[in-house]
Image (cartoon, rainbow, N blue to C red; front, side, top):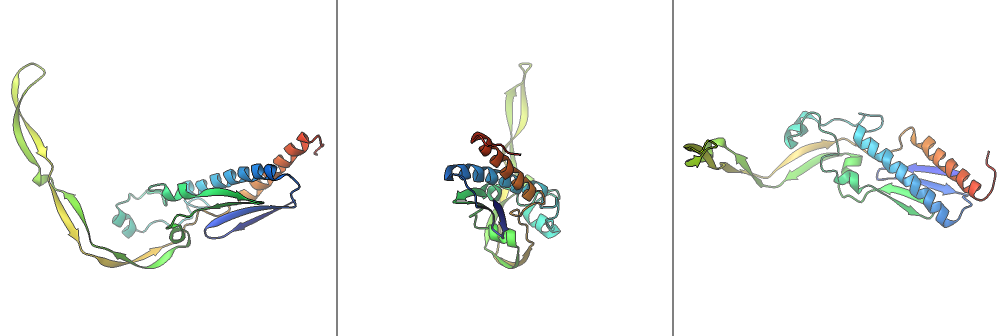
Length: 204
């Protein structure tokens, strides 16, 4: 039996050849390999690449633009990209990949211009808060006058459209970690031994 491993920008693939088992048995094995590889991909997200911390960090300008803290984890804000990565079995192959539309930009990187369309946002201004005095009965049962805020002050800020230069370094979680080939080989060998034992064969 041969195990063939391939990797490109948007997917990783593990294929089995000369595998003398039923289709159902192969599917179970491939499903297990897919789960194992997904866990490896998730580790790349958690550790910021392979080796850990190898993804280029965000620039100071990007941190400021997005209002991120210095410890912001890359590709982890909403979790949509991470959770979009799935495994699928077809024939003798299990493929790990994503159809998320921004994946190619994140995985391959991008240098160019970005058009920012006009937008508005509400800016909190404490000086515009409004208050009024109210009569209440305190815990001691006495009446007293308190100052309570009735509304928070906001102002609308309108931003004109503009074009900015951006540079997104490649940060691809769909890569094989150094330990992956040995893990895949071990999974296959354990499965083969289990199937052989079920069939009454002796496996050394």
